[in-house]
Length: 328
Image (cartoon, rainbow, N blue to C red; front, side):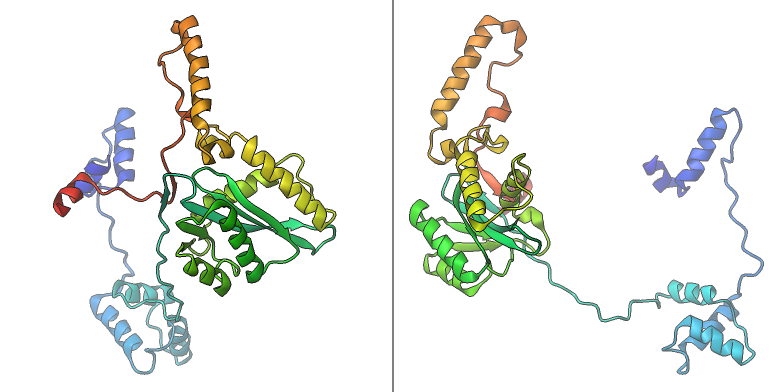
């Protein structure tokens, strides 16, 4: 239908109307009559005169409504305000005059991790305190390949110094990654954090402004945290918040079966223990295949139980075969 409309120049609504008329047994308007010109249409001379008035030094910087009111007060009527706007629009003379900000396009972060310890992602989330207006800040860093939380601390405030200390502690325990990704919070973009990453030769990566999808792993971990049935509406104290987060990290790393890593635990993936788990799963499925072959179309583990080969933040686009040939 779209191709026919483009070739004939007939609107899609007309084509549908004709088809419906023929379906009812009528001939339909196969050759639609063009709309007649309105009797009150301005002539070419009148349109040129209106444009000349609008272009004059007196009215060139005024809106059509002001021109219309001024001329009418002087006893002169040219045309309606809508006609003035229509003539200006037809001549491409209606534009935005405000000096609006023009922000440069931000580069999309494209990160790939094929093993644990390559790319860390971190963020800070607020935990409601005992009274309104009191919040605690949970600093959480995880490995995007294994989803293993490599660091979590809770403080009563957010600061660049605490963020630097937190990152230095994590690197001392789990090693220095190749890339550290975060959003554009004040602590993430602070000079102490930037200096630490520069000294350790770690590439720093940041999300685009107001694009939460650029930091998906940290956001997903926070959602898992705050959707827990036992997650409290408010924490009674800083000690309560720290104790709860410590229990959460322990359960998340060693008990939580993550769908993004083949329903393994983050600890098994991070420390390379998935081979034994996969063997046990395969043996169990093999026994089921032998016992009930008619129940299985494929003799392989479901894809949901297979560990992905890599983890991405904004998966890089692979060049097409044509582009590869041209580059060669």
